[in-house]
Amino acid sequence: MEREWNLRMELPGPHAWSAVRDGLGREIYLIVREAVVNAVRHGGARRVAVEARLVDRSRLVLDIADDGRGFPFRGTRSLGELLSGSVGPRSICERVAGLRGLLAVESTPSGSRLKVELPLDAVHG
Image 1 (cartoon, helix red, strand yellow):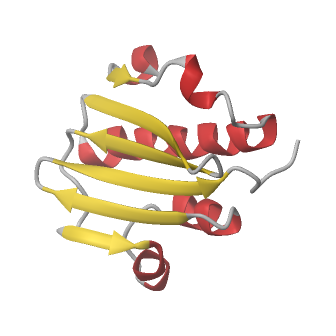
Image 2: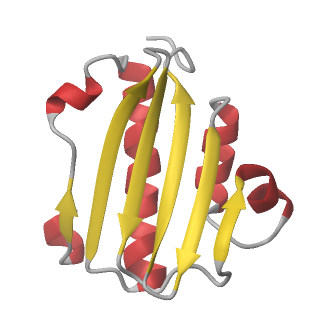
């Protein structure tokens, strides 16, 4: 993705994914990929940083931050607000909702940050 989009990416090391099963790993990959593509295409981002951490051994929290222009709104929106409105990363919202997760999107003129929280048992396999 760095070469394809001429982008600098910071990703967590392999230890961050030790508790993630393959099926959920694929879903996480799709969420991160969509966030990166959106940041570059729509926000003009040159840098994206992804952090991952376990919470209570049952949930994974992803923090995806970029240095682009942000979304058409300013401030923070929850998954419910994003789903009921017409702004924000629609496919990410639907994917996170389908995984019984939480999402908050913060948008500023100097970038955006997506905080995704997913249960580790959201997908079996």
